[in-house]
Image (cartoon, rainbow, N blue to C red; front, side):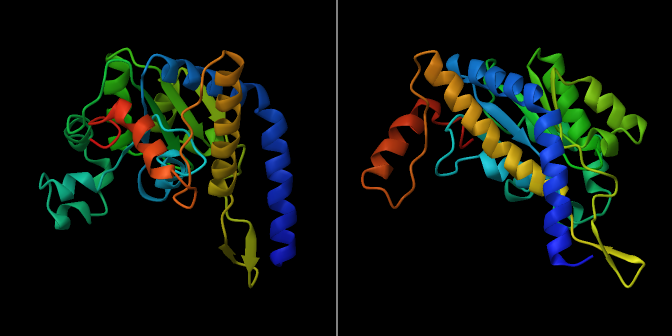
Length: 242
């Protein structure tokens, strides 16, 4: 396979995912809009490379304001774990760090949780999801169901979700074969990033249809963007940036 074939194969996966998950994406987007209309935030959780989805939605120009990023690195920045602990290959599978991280933020009872797992579930993500579920929060799952459900932890994680959006990507999600044996490139986060933008568009449309004014963040290049962005973010001051 060459670069052109990567584009072609990725487009096939995207086209299938779009058609296969159309209704799921619309339902999830509307449920996210419902959370936003109650002044709730969507808590975004992804670890490692799975942070990509949170970064696509969390405080991005052209995106919606009511998101907060749950970031494992905050445990190091706030002195709760050492850098050496964080760099341990088994760190994300420690049972104790989920509760430790979740308790660091100013999370409102109206908030929901959105988890993104492109391939493999970790214990820390599962523990946070269990905590959120015990608090009766709405749980959104976005990820490759085929990949994540390969083991019991992944299956149990998916069961906790109220809404599921499947990336429809293969396992493993590497597409190009190098020298007949080595697989390179990935496709899961390509689909994930596009789904994130589609969700933004669908949530925006849903809010407009209900007569709401969607809290869209403006680019810093736009005149008056700072004032506008502060106005819509101040509603969640101490929460979106907790």
